[in-house]
Length: 384
Image (cartoon, rainbow, N blue to C red; front, side, top):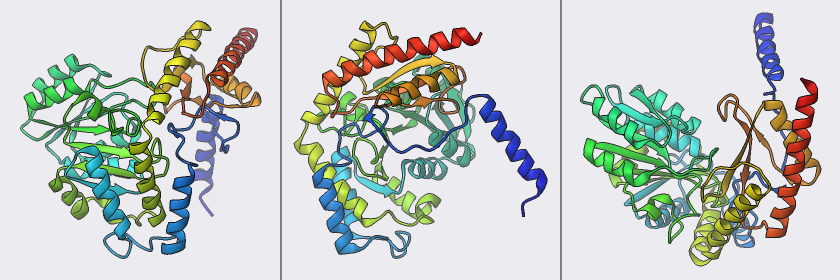
């Protein structure tokens, strides 16, 4: 039995979350998708389904061990070769998740005496990887090259400098100034590490991400495969020496059971679709632009931008939850995002567009959202 004092303490923490409107619950997808990261609609595509089913029939379900033991499969080697070519990199290494990939890169390559410069809105996995590295950390203002340049000039010590950023930020849907960051890294001999989780599959002529679209050169690209690619896992792409270092030294790689072989089969099919069906990303960005315009026409404030992630900032945690619940009752799967995923006082709906959303559906959603926001404002005023 756990100590009574521990149970009491945990109960107090859960009570604090409830009082702040931050207690969460688990709900499977239901209704028209405005929340998932399946931007290109590939997660249920017949080609991926068949590839995964064929792999299970051939290779079984489990990988049986880490990749340095019995978990290695020819499908992983082929997938990494294909993905490296897709990203224009020497090599790629496949991980079970984007979180593990980010931990591996930062905790392995950065060492005490080094300095990591990290955007203040970077994903939790980048933050945690930076902490594990034991390097010094400098947090710079969001998407601010001028402030970053000053910090780089003032950086103490002679260790290696790393600049870490997302290319498309997952909660605000805005883009990092990658070309300016790449120039700063060349000037200050810093290594640019870019998390392309929400950009890969969507941007660039090949669809390989914002590094491709902007022409910026990074040392390392980290690309989650469970979003636009429709399956799961994540890739680290870069020079051969980086990949070799991760194989030999990265604890999240060495001590994790390998991904399921069927995941590799599904991703090989996904890369074929991204190459042969560029209309998916064109349609996605068209639909995203249409939704932004219709939201503004309805008087709903949304930031300027081009991405498929559109935040509707509401502020109060309970009000954001009420808006999401009303939309769900009307058949739209939109969900409230609250701290710690976003800053205190910026609870929101994080709308994510996908290729399966038609313009009439987007119109109906905007009307429903406008009504939900109005109702929530009335309820909030009545409670004062």
